[in-house]
Image (tube, rainbow, N blue to C red):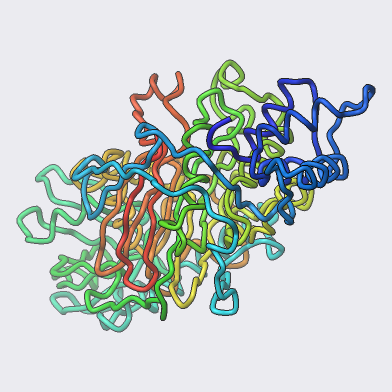
Length: 533
């Protein structure tokens, strides 16, 4: 059995009619001769045994050690993760590396791993140097009941917080005060976009709403910023400056817009970085339970994490869709490899055990996961947490800001990207370049601004989807496309997936980028993308 991993050991035992304790699997995988140890464990198992125990494996390994056949035991637990490997991977099993901002197939170079999987000592890190904090998580804080007042509260909170980000740039007045001003004067308004429509002459009429009323604003088609209207979504907060029409004080006024502002990321923004050379792997959309889940690619990724080349990877950030789920899209049952949702999470946990046990892991849910669909999504419940207990992962809500050694990583699964891509021109947002759609969310300082569309939003006592502070890294998934780039010095990364094309994806013309792992240098915010498919 070349390239042994705990998952491969478990599959081999299953093929021979046995289950096994997780610790037994780890002990077999860590033996100097895993194949020989497994054969001995099966051969000497009690006749009526259906499960290989850890004590039984220890006995086999101790006996082998006394006879000097090399199948010595390695101490450890399920979360140790490290596996000795005698066989080098073939070229087809080696990761492909791409660097820079652009297509994933540019400057590809195949790396041959000429080292075996190291012992845990190779990944002997100073754990005291690590730091990981989570903020902006709705888990345990949800108060919404779905009543009308809850929706009013969340929109008022959104307006107040985003308008604060705009007041430093414009001297805005409430719409009720603007309506009472004499015509011909200059003024500014901060408001939420309640309507956007074009006039018969090709100009744009935008209705802005604040807490005191609604006011119409006209953007002439020949203004240099007119193309920014194409980027507007309902319910986002913007600011405009302009001149009031002469009949304003008659109650039929309009503001002729001279300038338009988004909350946006300041162009002078300087991101924070870690104080040491340490890396994080950013992945999403594993989709265990699907017939198209790429188990071999995942195992190659897990194997690579055990190599000296990946020694500096100390964090693993998963941006949702751990499993394929059930009933997510039409006829999904026909494409499921595991039909029970809890069994899907059990299997995902087994795959998670393949990665090194010393990784700090953070997971948020996605739309395929067994949590509420409306955003913000609370983290997995206690039953699912117990199932996914491998490596003691940090489980938080969607979205959440994860501060990793001083670097703020905004993790959001990305459902609203569908809406942004559908509403905006292709050159500003597309599935082929998902990071450009992410730029739009950074510009709006909100991960899901439009209410009532493709994205289900839950009313809470505050809007958890507002970006109060600028993240250093914005990490999403969902669209199954790989894309990354920098917007005003913020690194935006959509990390692809671990699921090959499904029949449903074929029907909607989605060609996924599968088996990629973006590796982020936290000390420089440079990124390398590795391919394992």
